[in-house]
Length: 154
Image (cartoon, rainbow, N blue to C red; front, side, top):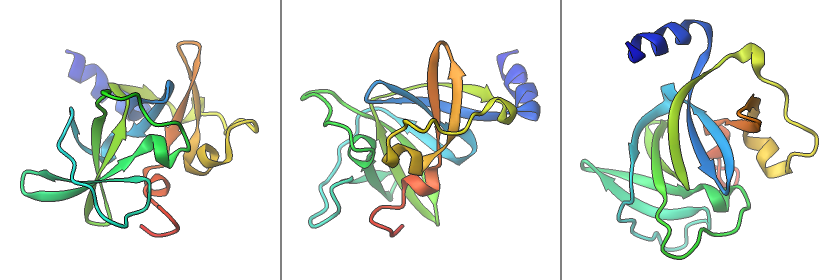
């Protein structure tokens, strides 16, 4: 019954997977999400940009792990805290976006989306598709393609 409700909502709104980065609620379009994983073994990549945590193996495919905290200019996560991975595909490559937590799939009507507030940090503003009011907080809808453009290259 719940799946039917989600499918019905999809006809009226965009579906988003919610996640948390540095205490900030965010969302990514569910259609770009390939997998959600718990803590994974990540191998560092020498000379990679600081946002790149490393690489991991997902069913025989190499996945580049991007630390969303570093990418968004936030302090590192606490020692011992394990990120969750939201795996997306862009340009034929797999990326694991490392988030502090992953929530649920929710409908976010495009009509309810507001433009970025002028006070939103420039880094966040660059990767945001807009904001939604949800549970008394602003949920930032992330643009995955822009988020994965690191150092002007993707």
